[in-house]
Image 1 (spheres, one colour):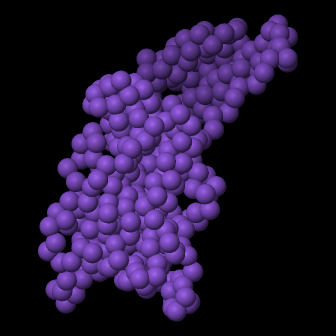
Image 2: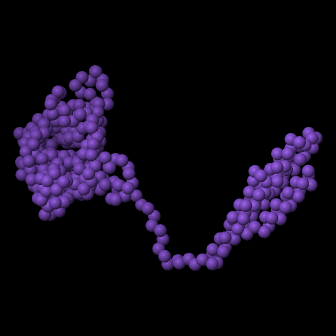
Image 3: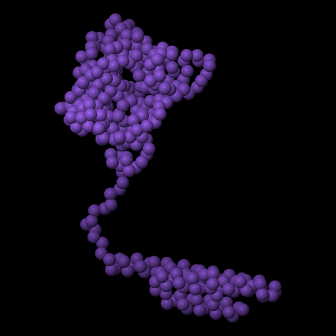
Length: 353
């Protein structure tokens, strides 16, 4: 049996010497190390050998198998190196060809629109003010002229963080709009100079949350940009001039805009702003619902109650506020028909921007 194992080893190594290609090497491996190979048959026959000889026979068979495996690995490495040398000698490399471009990340389409909005309002002298996303009912509703049980709250179904009975009419919730930042900003300024607070000119971007039925046009979370200007002798004409100029800078100098009467509890009077559909030029299409106009934001003069809650005397100060959705503006600019694309993380969609 020992002589047979030695013969198996010799035959296999001799056959390996003449191997010149990977395909032939794989056939050699199957023949000499596969399940039906001679060395594996030797292992299968160990049960018929006497106990006294079984130990030395098993060790010898293992040694033969390990030797064949080592020879196989060495041959495989030699063939690989030979293939590399052949490629270097026979193949030509054009060193003048440009390299492969490395894929780079890019800004989210909503972020691109946000930055464009920042740029436009920064040119007008507005500063960015950040406020918290978790608010009290007092800041989110009550100080903005939404008293408890006001019917206007039904338009902003809310995510309440805690239903603590001890808080009564002032529970904690995820903000439904960026408007609470108006109160925070005004109170910070009036705390520094309560008798003569400075004017305000800020935008307040951030994420908002509403308990919406998710559809092609509504999401439970969305980005909003609030705007606030407070000072002496600010009129509705200042509001119209600011937002009309914003529309021209954002959508082109030739864009037409209009204001329609509306109602928001924290502004009086209130309006919604439309721009001429830039896809059909006002002729009417599916995007503008054949009206020729696209709504982009809501706005109005700050309600005297809101000014008072912020610490500004409505007898001395006036102001205007507005709110817009960057996702909606992005949808209009790029003819995107489903708002859910923004948060689905589908690279086929995101890479288009």
